[in-house]
Image (cartoon, rainbow, N blue to C red; front, top):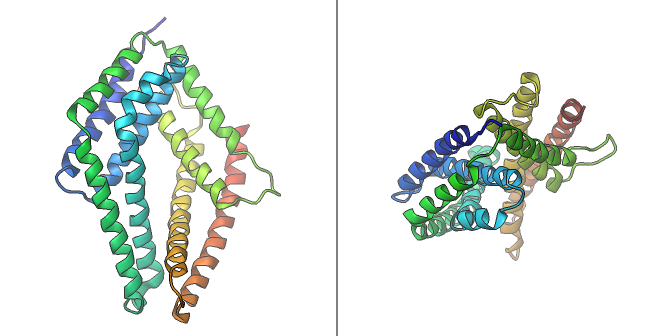
Length: 277
């Protein structure tokens, strides 16, 4: 049975090397763009470990241990993404009237500074040996795996994600459901990339992949709106008295949120019929 060890390590090496390089860069200075790139690399590495765990029928403990130093970093990098999206939403929805809401703009800036400080502290706590331990564990787990075994593992994970995608015309998508679908779509896209890079065909057609990418973009815009609504709501909840000047912005945000949610629901129904059948 053909071993996939060389192919697997080639795929892993690419993301591992990119992640380690970006980590070195932001250990000197954190930039949001680089932080988001590192989040993507760590997302892939976590998913890669999940594939290995399935392929090895449950050596999860060692795999979890190897990623443990990076777990909190990944979590906090997501917060970097969130505060960036909140700032983008603030720039978009408050527009030319931002000067009227400068206090809220300062609150966003303060949250950003706090998040960046925490991320930097975590980065400094991760050692070169942590990176080496992760690599060695993946190398050990990937040795001797067959194409059939890896194919089965990836297919199982994709099928599990697809189960969460099913809903009928009467089902109303709530924010948590959309968030879960968003994460699931990202996972499926990365798993399909792994399949291609080790010489397997993708499960879904190019047309489906194109629609998946379109849905992912719509969900990113929805996510930006959702985060700004939550952040602004938390900010205003701390005030004894809320100025009426916020009401037009809140109404605009809520209307946009409702419209984007409907668009995503319609696209999901059309797309998931193709993916599930």
